[in-house]
Amino acid sequence: MTKMLLKYIHEFKDRHGKTRRYVRRPGFKRVALPGDPGSPEFVEAYRLALDDKTAARIEVGASKVLPGTIGDLVVRYYRSTEFLGLKASTRATYRNIIEPFRADHGDKRVALLQRHHVKDMLAKKASTPTAANNFLKRLRQLMALAIDVGMRVDDPTVGVKPLPIRSLGHPVWTAEHIAAFRGRHPSGTRARLAMEMALCTMQRRGDLVRMGRQHLQGGVLTIRQEKTGTVIEIPVLPELQAELDQLPAGQMTFLVTGQGKAFTSAGFGNLFSDWAIEAGLPTRYSTHGLRKAGATRGAEAGWTDHEIMAWGGWRSLSEVQRYTRSVNRRRLAEGAVHKLTTRTTSGKPK
Picture 1 (cartoon, rainbow, N blue to C red):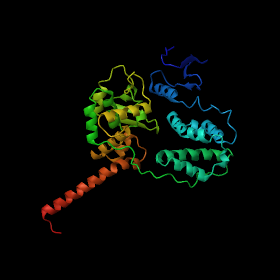
Picture 2 (cartoon, rainbow, N blue to C red):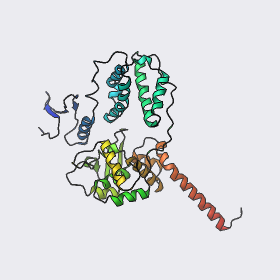
Picture 3 (tube, one colour):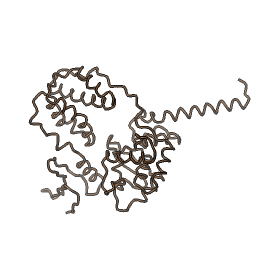
Picture 4 (cartoon, rainbow, N blue to C red):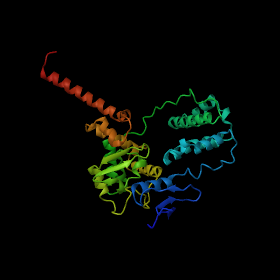
């Protein structure tokens, strides 16, 4: 039997002689671990099991809520196949949105929630329209469940419009920003590795912190995106390879904390923001801005939208075209200037 060095691992042989492995944490449901220890599917399942804060919390207070209340509805939602079928990271995100709502209104009856209440709650979140709209999405899901289980006969969110988003989101890194970061964080540092990974792979931070040697073979990184489930294959560019070559031979995960442990997505994002500020960049310059910069860089190099979409794992052309549209406009404008200049200097008659 393989000796297990990871925490919370329970290993045994079933009645058929097959070795079974589970993550068993006090107060949490046990989670089966597929594959052999060290395999990509084993490592991924173990990481998700430790990251998932939902399992132990969904039943907290379930026996104390009154039937027909918001608290009752939330507990039912956490037990639903719709919620349990989500990825662990998505469940955690949804909970962070729903829990403040339950804390404020958990003892109120679902049937009494009216459209003007929903609009009032959105108005209070007007300073953060993206967060307000995410709340509206979760509230729609809760109301759909309320109708299914007979708590309501109508949906009070119907007709409530999302708040307009005027922000362009995370700013795109320019060549000057990238040069400034490289100048402040030399080759061989964690900061430099993180920046090159984000720029060269065009992946979200949740996937960046998972990448390791198990995903690398023959100069190609193959990973299943955490958010979309899409399997992508990314050739390793020279600037990234130069950083990977400097990692200790025994280090499986590329990006680790100062204590040699795996990053959480949020923890990595906060540290990367600090690295960017140290390089003299304004606030809000993040790894997501580098994801956009990678797409822009590809467009400037002449990549097609489909090539960029495949590299970054975007699911639709419209997502990619948001980043490449300005490059395409500039290219067309430059072409127009060239045609006009050529026509003028050639002396062709009109």
